[in-house]
Image (cartoon, protein in one colour):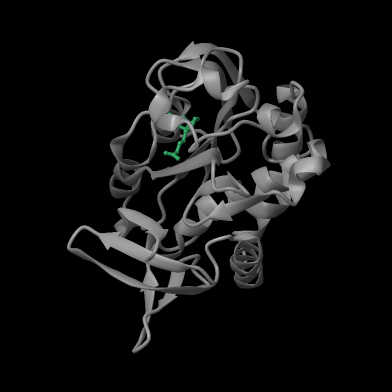
Amino acid sequence: MPQTRFADVRRFGSIDSTNRYLIEEARAGAPEGVVAVADHQTAGRGRLGRSWEAPAGANLLLSVLLRPAIGPGERHLATTTVALAALDAIGVVEPRTATDVSIKWPNDLVESSGRKLAGVLAEADLVSAVAAGVLQPPVVVGIGVNVNWPATDADLPPELVGLAVSLRQMIGVPVDREALLAALLAALEPRAADLDSVAGRARLAEDMATHCSTMGTRVRVDLPDGSFEGTATGISPEGHLVVTTGKATRTVVAGDVVHVRPGS
Ligand code: BTN
């Protein structure tokens, strides 16, 4: 995308993982803004050590390298930045779907029935930070958007039917991946700029709250050391989920969460 920090777009027919690639580039000193886009990944990474799979040439698979001057407590806002930019881009390219797509905290784009349209995975390069003796590591944020796959539910493995959806399914016609990529990188510039100021970070958290379908719902939060239930009532200035349990208010940090699911 010319005239933005995201001008260096590196394209791959096939690569193991665009996140892995950019983490290595970050270690080698690559500047903020490098983008890696793949037609296909052979070892795409998802959250919680899962894999992320899509057939070649169908979906948007990309990662961006950010070097935000933010502390560890605010790092989740890097994920928020990319999730909001993707939402912005979908609104530009396919306005018919815009009101139908929201963010399920911490990092999924979902359509109104809850099926997942996109996932975001941020990986901080702590090795670089330790080597450089700094507290602000580069962050690689990857996103996989189901653009044209699945074309129908018949394309999905049975365990994903009802859980995943594509833009093509939502609209009924194939969607232009290149247009979505261009719109996403354009939307990313102002969103990434917001990471650089206190007011901008507050705006990211507010916009997240506005577009987050988890707000106001009953949730059960599974943490590595136990779970609790409450109502999601806000997004903290750091991008964390605020859950009111009746007696108290707890702030849930994305990195600690195993699952946030509808509560009983
Ligand atoms: C999730 O589990 O919801 C996050 C999925 C993130 C997938 C994307 S695809 C492009 C980038 N490269 C990867 O290896 N993963 C991310």
